Image (tube, rainbow, N blue to C red; front, side, top):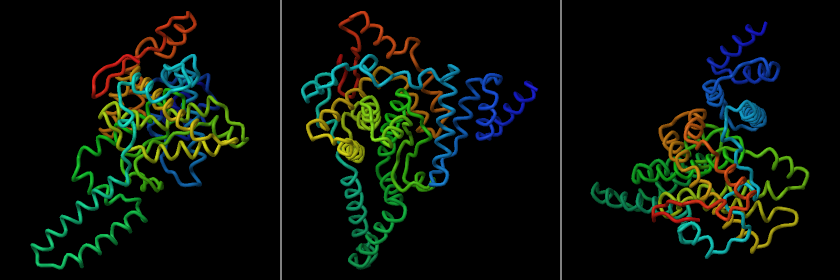
Length: 367
């Protein structure tokens, strides 16, 4: 019977029937053999349909798979960095601007997103200017053509979250896509290291809309502990810190790779909304410190796992499925995990515990 169950499981994995795989794992967890390749294949088979009726079921499947594979030792990096002072690279909780700039080698301005609103306004102005010139060449009245285009852009924003204008912008500025990839790779990697299951990612508004999500590019992750705690109005500091670091990771990635974060204004808004919505709500001073602390932790964690980050970004850019993106992280992990090394060094009282070399577009600095 055991070999029959194993054959049934292997067939389900091969055919991408992830629900059947999960059912078999739940019933025969100890009896079934699962290879790394099968684990990655099952992660790639997780559906990414974010309609309300499917969301909870998909989160249950996703959480179970990450947990089961971690328990089997198949995902060494998943959750390897607990969001506690023993393991995080920066032990200090209070981070002022001077400390942030000294530790990262980046100016505060580099970590301040320019905002997507400016991006879309610039793209809109460029299109209108082009239309004006073309209309004059064709003998058309620009004041008739431009308002129609403006109305079309408004419909685009309302109906498909700006997917059409985003496509135009990608065509005019090819580097925009690369920045989106780097930004989302930051969220992906840090969420993975902190133990937040990742269901998938979108690199364009078109992809998000196709999955039933009204919005731009994004990484779909969730934190079961945080969700449960928020439902009971008892959120722990560890959960607050974990969420904060993941949210600020996209800004951190852009700043490190390009020396300037352009995207991420909405991430800042999400973090502020989360912190002031706590009971009791956080004041402005605490919120600003938490944002600086979180982006610093993200930068240091990314520097500790830079090869994993670079390979992940490459896999995402090439359109690899979820499992292969996870494989890109796992294959590049150092033999001794940085979080473990840091915790052991701190336990010995080593003053250099957690010291990380940050390499950005500006050069390298020890933080």
